[in-house]
Image (cartoon, rainbow, N blue to C red):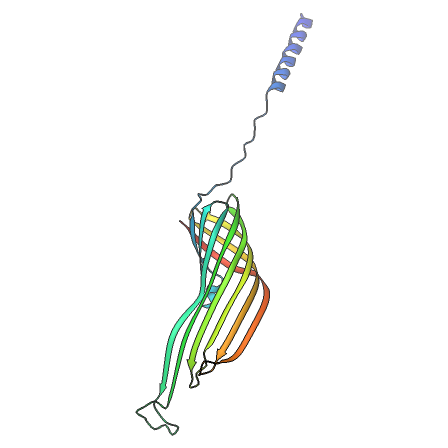
Length: 216
């Protein structure tokens, strides 16, 4: 009787261990990282240089998720100033101005380019190339007339990292290496060339932009 009981107990234990060993352990499912909706457009404001009194607006168009066209406008200024002095050297009033001065200026900096993208959840790595064009035209008479014109252009390879906060809001930072050429000229009152300067240079900017972007 005891022998039979021991055999039944051993058989039950063996059967239970055999069945348990055939059962697969539960699979641990990985929580997928949050995927954000892709928008074709986004507009950005550079917050880094805004503390210096000017900033850059960047507009991007992404027909595909792996790349986007870029257009940025920054450092745009334009104005007209006229200054008249209606006293002579002895500070006596005059009907006509003894000294007249005028200043007209126009300056614009624009970049066009393309960026490649690689998404990883809320993060995005992007890199590409911008082409820079800058034009500065200054005409001043104080009282000598000497206009200045400056035209510059360059190549700006960049790499950056973007973090998607919300579906329509993100922040990003960029690093740039610039290769720039500038042609600067001044002219006489008769329109003859007075001075010419040409310059080529390169520089590394570890933080060229700190953008806050709205996606739409």
